[in-house]
Length: 434
Image 1 (cartoon, one colour):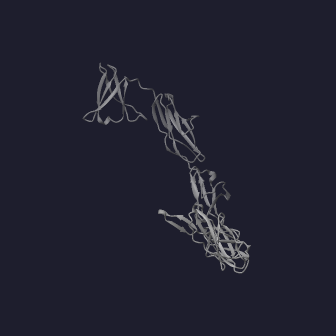
Image 2 (tube, helix red, strand yellow):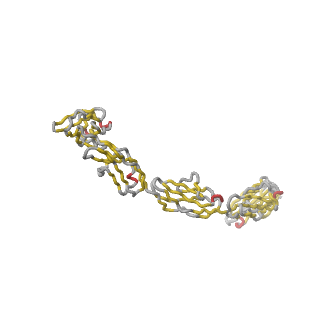
Image 3 (cartoon, helix red, strand yellow):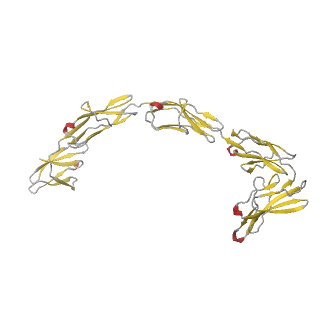
């Protein structure tokens, strides 16, 4: 019974939905489920109907009413309504019969809790003692299963949706009794859809073994050579960088509460990749005071060790992939190689020739350049008066190879001007004072 104030001042009365079989008789007490607080119920009215007429009783507080005042051997029909604080009464609940003195049944066998796989028939049974005409009801998670009215509940093809708490209610006109709850868990058994695959990979490679499985609430456990791997309880087994120790056979167990299966065995073959050079070191020229930086790029399995040599003699401190010599002098000129090794290979690079030259004579010449209409370039300079300069050109400053272009003489005003053809425009130009 639910009393509710509608829109625009219209009052409407709704029927209260009684749970767990509406009204319940337990010994000589009538019980029902109270309305929620938001329904504003002021009191309940119990209607007691018999050949003697109709009695009504108001109930405030606990939703229960003692039937001790009723006469024995008379069949009564009981129903309940709710009245709101506004004075509106709902429709009555469904009626139940009651005869004072009829014994309440006794449960002699409770349904048993169980866990079973989907498709396995679910059978629950209850046994009770009492007068002839016992009535049976089954509830799942407090919801009436209207189609089940026998001492035996049977679901031929259960699914996980049939999991829940089952209770049997056995009743007579004198009251009812509930069985102990039976906890039923139905799970789809595990099934492997995709098996882990065997593979051969090099040391240091990231990799993962995985299995694809179906089922309810699956659990995983990976095994290496038949032994469980601590913490490996996911559908995939991750390797950040493979090592030789990872070479083995692997298998995964997939389980839930109803079954356990094992995957096929996957063989993981881990091998060392030989060392090979993919770049460097490269020859270079630089001016004294600069930095020598030689780098070797290699491919191969870890661990890798490096050893640089100068003119065939190992440099004791040079054991990285890059050789760096700061503030280089002419004594650092020479032929450099690097040897690289891993557990299965030892290789040495081609030589990188390094030339460290003294700095060129100081030049106090400032150059400016402008393009001419014929495509050539005019070079103007502000320099020391009556001084001769050599113009040099190179294509690269990384490995410079300065080539003499021509001489130029600054006049008494400290200026000179020359033109160079278009073919010589690319590259870098400098002056050397002579």
